[in-house]
Image (tube, rainbow, N blue to C red):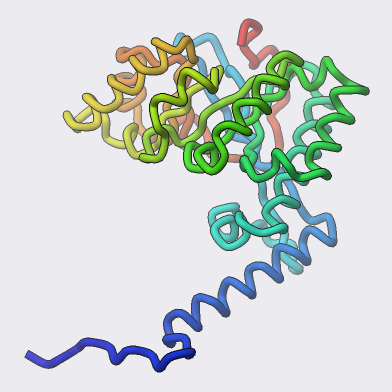
Length: 276
């Protein structure tokens, strides 16, 4: 058998793979920064359906950027490279601004927007939010802020204080991607999230996967105990949707119900659930 082991890089030198990744990330950072400078940011909207069949509970607004040709770039293609940087905070600012403007333009809409815990201390992000709280408090009452499980654990105590302050002003909070393996359960007594969004890895093929069924039931039970509405993400088949509904989730989100779209549907026909 031939020895296929790679030679170690010389001290102070990057390996070819590391250099290629670094160059790719620098290119991604530059592309995103240029798009932000041009104002080429948009939201794509994906519905979250009520499991009781009573319509759409809310939409999630997912950030997109446009490259110099106008091509739409989804978040999965750039967030990994920018999330820890100032550009990541600028993306959060763009998401919040577009989301709040969209809520203001659509009085029956409820909309969730993703944010990083790192943006809690970012002056521009807080300025946008505080400005809307001052000028349009009724609009902000229809805003849902989604924070991923991994992001929460960066600074749990600060996030808890931030949430308590804003929940008093009517903002709803969702714990996103729950079950991906980061949360210390003791913090559930501190956070008081309103919505628990179960990570999509548990929804896929759950109708036929006994392990996913046991884990999903446990996560639903946890959400119930702490008085959270439970949403399953990445629902992609009728069988999975039916199983999750029987298991007791409150909401369902995924390609089975609709892919993220750059335009909101017409909401004048009452598609939004009134009690959502």
